[in-house]
Amino acid sequence: MITQFLDTVDGIVWGIPLIVLIMGAGILLTCRLKVLQFRKLGKALKYMVHNEEGGTGEVTSFGALATALSATIGTGNIVGVATAVVAGGPGALFWMIIAACFGMATKYAEGLLAIKYRVQKEDGTFLGGPFYYIEKGMKERTGHNWKWLGKLFALFGCLAGALGIGTITQVNGIANAAHSFFDPNDAHMVGLFGGSYSVSVVITAIVVAGLAALVIIGGIKRIASVTTVVVPFMAIAYVIVCLCIIFYHIADIPHAIGQIVVAAFSPSAVTGGVVGTMFIALQKGVARGIFSNEAGLGSAPIAAAAAQTNECVRQGLVTMTGTFIDTICICTMTGLTLMVSGAYETANQANIAAGILEGADPVYDGAALTQLAFGMGLPWSHSAGAFVVMAALAFFAFTTILGWDYYAERCFDYLTNGNKAAIQVYRWIYILAVLIGPFLTLSQVWTIADIFNGLMAAPNLIALVVLSGVIAMETKDFFRRLDSGEYQENLNFHVR
Image (cartoon, rainbow, N blue to C red; front, side):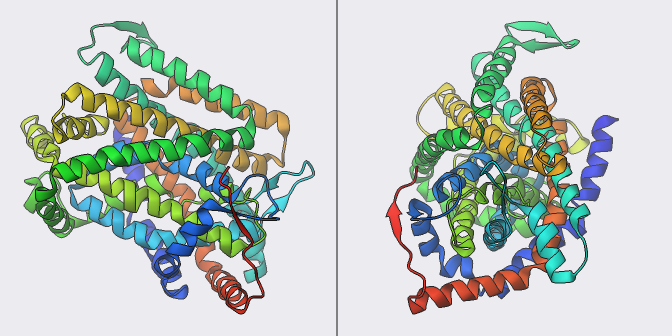
């Protein structure tokens, strides 16, 4: 009954109106910015690794991006892509990439507005994000008080952090991968919370929660110092393994791409009837894409607001590289790995045989499908592939836990007007959620995360549409000053 209720709510939240709002906002911003996300991608990548001299803020632009990437490069890249492909067919990957192309413009707008409307608190820290550009920017634009909408966004952000994308989904992904690798046959079980769980799951929960607590208590600077080291390392390592699998099966790439495109418009032609309609592929692709890159969700601008910069456009460019790296690069590689390795075909046949058409749970879903792809993709043992996925998930999901704690705390700070005691209590609630996350079912976990993601996205996207004129004006002014020499970039290569 709980699962059916959550599925009903998820269907309402992620219905046609939100899909139209997400895609519509991205298309609107792409048009108003004249396809800036591709025209200025090279400059954005340069700004990403060159700090701005004399910029005001708490961490470098790269540090802010690394914090945002730590929250986006997570289970969405490994588990999210796999669940999207199982639920929506290979075509879900096509719609995920299309949404990301427009999402880069959305992410640019979020980073720009975060700097433009951020505030510096009495203790010297910076606070910004959708709650402030909703409150301040929309009031300037419309003349009405929209603070209630900013509060609503902050509330959904707190809930998403503690009960969805920030904690439960991440540690659940780590625990499932550890369980599949260390104790796949449930040989070592222990009774807990009225159920029976593998010892590997229990140990994972304790270790991850403990490590998260050690970093989270240190705040944004400690989180940024950890993520600036871990994020580049883990992303590069994962991409290298994916590329090895893709190049090993390079002859199969044209067929895989053909399947993805065909399934995007006619899912049953590829899935054997497992997926019903094109809308399901579109819905799952966009929803899982948003889960992975968070474009339009309103989370990344919270980290961007702490960047050491005096130029809002500059930070907008840096922020949009997150979507490019996360979805267009890493998620695409994961999706191609599932297809060229033959893992999707194997899993699809196994799921049909298990009765998925009659409503049974899939045999291969989430981390299990990606582990299958990594095991089949290279001439090594399946256990070696499972270990690589487990290690990647451990790093990816752990840094997502850290990044989302910062997001959720900033939202809670806005809700409570900076009540330090309340924020400290929220931190421990967040850590407790990490501890209990592995003991919830996978389908419920992802559905809850999708619901809170959608609820967060709605007020943020409304603000982006209303403020699209401000975004276009600031962009035009920045490049006018840059081209005329009025603004000097003053860059130095320093990412820490």
